[in-house]
Amino acid sequence: MKDAHQPDWARIPNGATRNMATATQAPPAAPHEPVRSDRTRLLLEGPVLPTLLKLAAPTVALMTFQAVVNAVEGYYVGFLGSDALAAISLSFPLVMLMTTLSAGAYGGGVASAVARALGAGRRDEAARLAGAALSIAALIGVGFTVVLLAFGREIYATLGATGPVLDAAVQFSGVLFLGAVPVWVFQAAASCLRGAGITGYPAAVGAVGGVLTLAVSPLLIFGAGPVPGFGLIGAAWAVVGYNVVSAAALVRALRAPGSPFREFFSALGPDRRRTAAIFRVAAPSAINTLQSNMTFLTLTALVAPFGTAAIAGYGMGGRLEFLLIPIVFGVGSALVPLVGANAGAGNHARVRQATRAGLLLGASAGAVVGLTAAALPGVWMGLFTTDPDVLATGGAYLRTVGPAYIGFGSGLALFFAAQGTGRVVQSLAAAFTRLIVAAVGGYLVVRVFGRGLDALYIAMAAGLVGHGLIMIVVARHELGLFSRADCK
Image 1: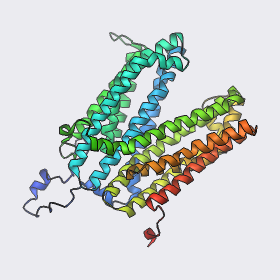
Image 2 (image 1 turned 30 degrees about the horizontal axis):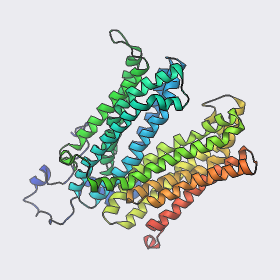
Image 3 (image 1 turned 30 degrees about the vertical axis):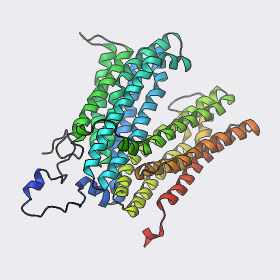
Image 4 (image 1 turned 45 degrees about the horizontal axis):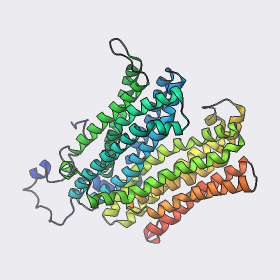
């Protein structure tokens, strides 16, 4: 029976036990023949859409479950009072920034480089990439820890925290960001596995860790029997413990027998060529993450003059993006290795097929989420408020901007496809379409032409649609997305 605690590396034909048993029955492969695992062959030869769905499903499920874990953690902390809730709310943007940078930007660069190496049959290169990726991740994690420990109080004070809330935020993040290194190592290891077509195991580790966190967190927060309660920092220690154990489990998986990454320990340390290969994708992706946050802040500033109800309505309505992003990220985490492996193998027709499949799934997710919210805005807004003014402004946002989420989903999916190819710069430029159209257009209609909130929402919708359309144009130019050769 397969060991449930390790990914299935046993099927990898790397000259290990299984091949030794059949050595007398078949001649060895020619030295120049690429050595590819069954999982890599699935990326190169399996039916595109079913393979994409199979790889995406575990990550989508994990991200959905993690959203539940975060909500329950907030419920626990709520018993400690409003100061504690405010403290974790202040730390949330920094935690999200670290998560999106480590998983989406840096993780995308790692998965892309690994997938292209394995697609080309260069298993030794994949192991060296893993060693470099883990080393760089640990260094970045140390950087996050140092910055938050040294400047946490100043950062939170700049965000407006004072008194007991400021003290609580500093204490909470001081413990939480002690675990920055395992967060980055976990995401780097998970990205190596995803680049090899292994998505189920990282998701399983994350899910088991989430369950254990929910079990341990109330004990550390409130205490029980001989175990003292640590209050708010108990919640932080629970998360740190989860990250340490999860990172260790994934690093162990990289060292498992048959793994293409088994020799990564010999390649630990930043290597100039492999660092460049990772950051060629990771750096533009990080800029894309930052510009997304900049867009949200800019649009919030444009909404602010319309009053508190408008700010709350836009904020609650805009949270719909957080429902769509996990779905599209799950698709994207599968699209990167599928596109990357085929790009590495020189199978450009299949790269186009995978990109079209990802575009279909991203657009479909955006359409389902956005159109449902536009048709039933009260259902979504009712989860957060009963205030009629907030319901009205949030409902207007969903009715206007919701249908445009098809462009948002399309653009995100195509950006992940660009990560897989290793060519992200043009896609990054296209991603700024949303900021330019929505923010600049919104400023013009509100501040110059004196139009109302409805006109601003139209500018936001135009930004999302423009983002999706420009990304399609870039994909057509870069990949020949709708090549006639594929129809022959």
